[in-house]
Length: 587
Image 1: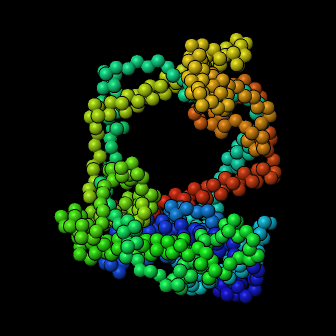
Image 2 (image 1 turned 90 degrees about the vertical axis):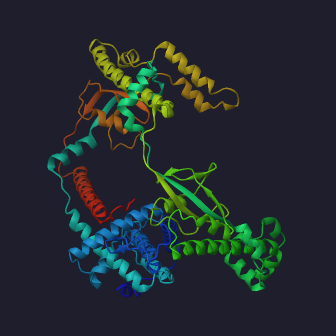
Image 3 (image 1 turned 180 degrees about the horizontal axis):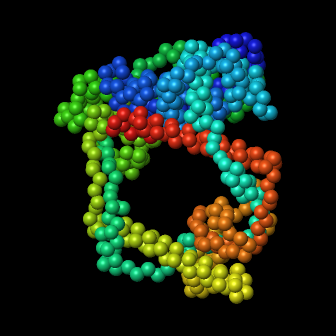
């Protein structure tokens, strides 16, 4: 079905395939890092089924991620996709394909696949029209990739078509009402004239009474907040690549030449070395010029490969011998393997582990977070300047520490809660005060500046001194100086501003606070981005909306699309939750 279009569409270029390779590589890294133990069906692990995909089989996971990466690219044209997103989309993809099978949605015909592909964003030009040349460039490049045989690409495209069909079936036409469309259109076109008073929340520092009795009472009521999370106790078995250097034989000339050609960008001549040359050197000449560097890099690469193999063989031997978790023989095995060992500080499953202050990498976290009593060790993973196998020694159950252990933490929590309570209280009192003063003829600025929440002279002086203290000596910074001068409320006026205006407007939390206000009204205190706001509506012009207007029609389409997306997202999330195997964490 694809060959029909391939024969008709032609042009040069390889940039699309380059982006595709990037997202596929990211997917591979993510899968390898996120897969615990020796996950492969050929090694006899119990099947972990998720809508027909074995989550314990690396081969199936890699195939699922490859298909997902290509599907994302076809549907969005976006190559800047992380491995985490690919895995989330992969789970949704598997669930929806299961639903497509349940609904008996047939594969596409030749005509329907032609029409479907002609609408894919990756094949559209800047005017939104199908670009046959972009299509041909894509398939000319992808057919040279051994990871994407023609039959596999055909299947992925067919699956994407069926996914599109089942998604349309689930989301329907999108639900909205005339009232919602009219209200939203008016909100977008309404013009506001506002005066906004903003006050940094961090500058509000009320006097808070504190004592042992108060802290004890707060702890007794809120002890659940301080319950620890389950933590993994992790250790590692490590082989530095430097140890393998001694066993690497001297390379043949062809070995060095092949290594140079595969990594030629690392060994290009510098501008100084190229001075006076009329042309770039041939690989043989470049080898002579850079022999020492190339030899050292070749040995380093060989050592890394040998070390990775050693670590992988060790992990496989643990699996093959059926070594149970915390087996007493493990220490002797590590010694016999000539490896080093160590432990991480206990960490929660979603926290990157550290050892002696040294942070591990994200792929190590991904591998370790899924370890359990059955799959208690990982495959070989790059670590420091070598490779390591990470393993689970135990799990620390959650518990609530006694007050003396966490006194400082409890006190900080109490102060934060009390500050927030007093801030909310002062905000309500201030809003009422501002309204009273406006009714008496006082200006908005004067009313705000004398409201209960406004800092006193002593507080302002303290804030200024604190800010300027941070500017002393070598730390002087003009931006900090300007911030030091912003003590108390800052006022900004907006004239005839609407949400669809291209001009810079107030924060979105301000619009959320004033939607139901009329002219002359003052908002309650609202907070966002570390600031508290009071807003005076000086003027408000609500337009009549023509239901035939472009704004009204665009709003109707946007609301319907949002309704479709929300329903599809919720349905997919429910499918993923239902399909997750018992005790399996799907992230």
